[in-house]
Length: 465
Image 1 (cartoon, rainbow, N blue to C red):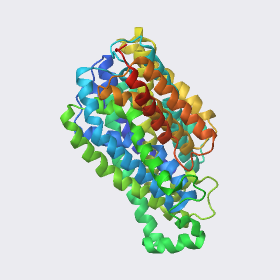
Image 2: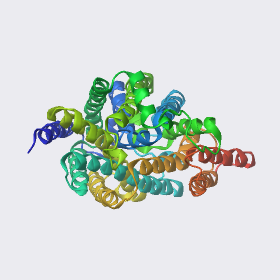
Image 3: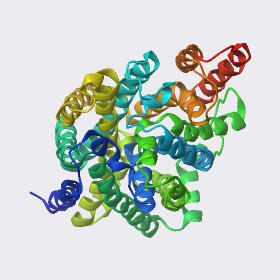
Image 4: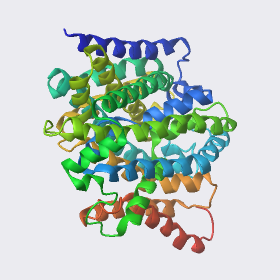
C-alpha cells in the first residue's frame, strides 16, 4: 500500500474514532439519537452546519462547474453564501425558538399544524419528499467520494461508495446525530486545511492572481467573462437565482436539525459567526483553486469534477496528497451522514410512527436507507453538481416555504400547505423542462410561486382547519 493510501486511511480512521467516541455521551433513546439531546454548544453547531452544507458539491461539483464556466462561478459561490446569510439572520433563531414550544425531532413534523400528530397527511407527504430527495442528495455525496478515490488510487467506482457508506453507518450507529456533529467538526478543519494547502501549491506553481488572469486568457478568454453566455433573463436574474439557492437552506432537513440541536435560541448568533468565518474563505478558495487548476491541468482531465484529486496527486507529496484526499472524502461524509440520519428519522418518526420511540428500529431504518442510497449512488449516471442542485432545489421549493410560515406562526391551513408544495414542485420541473435553469436557478421561481399561492389563498381563510 502506498504512502498516499496510508495517509488517507489514517485520517479516515481518525474520523471514525471521533464519531465512535461520542458513544460516551449518548443516551439510548430516540430523541438523543436524532437531535443530540437539544444541548450542543454554538461553536460546534456552527462548524458542523458549515461542514454539512459544504459537501462533495463544493469539492467535486462546484470545482467541475468552475473548470467549465471560469470566473463567473464566483457568482454561484457568493450568491449562495449571501442567500444563506439571510436565512441565518432571519430564520434560524425563530426555528430554534419554535422548537422550544413545539418539541420535534424531525423536520417533516414542522410542516404539520400539530407537530405531535404523527398521522398528519402533510407530515407524511413531507417525509416522503425528504426521503426521496435527501436519498438522491446523499447518493451524490457517496458518488463524489468514490470519484475522488477512483482518480487517486484507480479503485473501482463502487469501492469508494461502499467505503463511505460503511464508515458513516459505523459512527452513526454509535452516536447518532451527536457522532455526525462531532465528526463534522473534525472534518471542517481537514477540509479547510486541504483547500489552503492546494491554494499555496497552486500559487507557487502559477504565480499571483494577476499571473493567473494572463494564463486563463491564453487558454480561453471566455474563462474571464463575468457573465455566462446566452442568459435568457440577464446577469441580475442569474445572480439572484444563486442567492435563492442559498435561501433554499430553509428546506434542508440535514441543516435545520442542527439548529434544533442547539443548546439555546440565544446561541444562534454565535453559531452564525463561526459558520460564516469558515464559509467565506472556503467558498472563495474553492473557486480560486479551480481556476488555478484550469492552468495547471490543461488537457489532462476527462472529467472536470476530478480536478482537485488530480491536482493533489500531481503537485503534492504523497503524505499531503493523502490528507487532501481525506479532506475531499470528509466533505462527502459530513453531508451524507446527516442526510442518512434525516432519512431514517423520516421513516421511523413520520412514515411509520409506531416505530416512534423504538431506539433499535430507528437505527435499523438508518441501515436500510444507507443500503438504498448506496444503490442509487452506484446507479446514478448524472454528475455530482447536477444531482446536488436538483435535490437542493426540490427540498427548498417544496418544504421550505411551508416550514418558514409555520416557524413564523403564520396562519396556514393544511389545504394551502399542500397546494404550495405541489405548486413549488411543479414549477421546479416545468422550469427545468423549459431549459431555463442555466439562466435562472429553478428554486427562485419555485419559491415565488409557492409563496404566491399562500398570498392568493390567505384572504379566503374563514377558520383554521
